[in-house]
Length: 217
Image 1 (cartoon, one colour):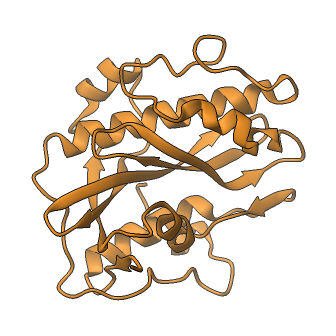
Image 2 (cartoon, helix red, strand yellow):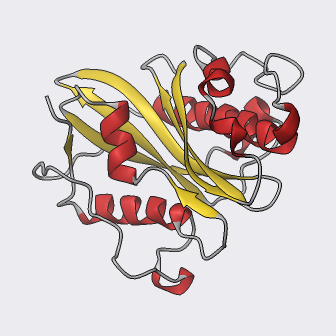
């Protein structure tokens, strides 16, 4: 069954466009490996639909700081929610974390009980450090939950040639779990668009500029 993405609701369009903003990059040495649609389709191939919820950081600042030790810097985050019938299949968060050179865009898939099921690098910016994309490294995050340290030199082994990017990966994964768990344990169900459609709107053909993209995320 192909996952159905909801796109007719203007709020959903805004959520997706805001996520696409994370992928925009003018830097050299940039490689994009996934679009938003591709990564969500890959994460939830059997789900009937993918909805979303918006986490307003200020509203949950105290809880997030207690889980992470800091307050995430973005004003708001998108938590994608995959479902089939009344069953929640899982969650996904797409987010940037600064690496050695520039931000790295990560996508983290979680189960319905907020355990990591998969981690992908969507966009890597910089001349070195791509070793973090190796399955052996990313596989260390599988099964991790909010109560795990998820820290380099603790329960995550860094890649010698990419220690900073390794730490960035761990920080992004931990934050994704905290964002999803904080928001979804307080939310009954993801927002739904009036009618389903097959695809998330594609990114503009021409490179977007920061001023043309939604702000605050």
